[in-house]
Length: 200
Image (cartoon, rainbow, N blue to C red; front, side, top):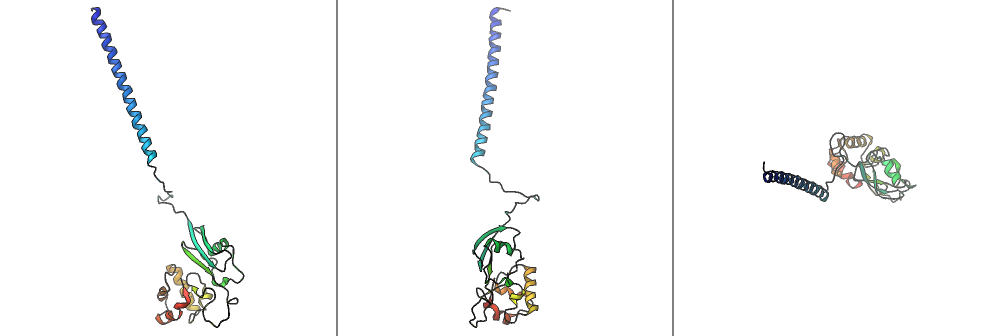
């Protein structure tokens, strides 16, 4: 083989190697750029994650917002654990005052989110003005009152007071005073007589 042909063959192989090498380097540069761009895009648009529980559903924070008013040391809005009860809300509010009527409050009742809890003044501490209105803020809370408190209402005896509590435990909180009409034994006339004495 002539020397010129041999040199041309070597030069051709070198050029081929250089071309392949350049193509590999170019491919690596493009791949690195694509990966870097993907990372930058991911950083520019973060995704907010929601905690998921064992059943695959979004986890709930488990907190209750409860507004505590009336005869407590520090009335206000408190954030409590999801399984908190009335006694926990009163403790968070610094405890009750000396004239609080704890017989009108069920300390063991579980709380619900968004609830307003009012601790009334005891009958002994209320002013004797001849009014038939219950002690405290003037109203019996249908969602908090125990049987004894409900029996202070006109024409509400032990049996009817128990029916009100049973209805509340079966159907949940009263949404309005008018819901009393759904309690067996309470008609329009009885409701009209106590409507201004109760609240939800």
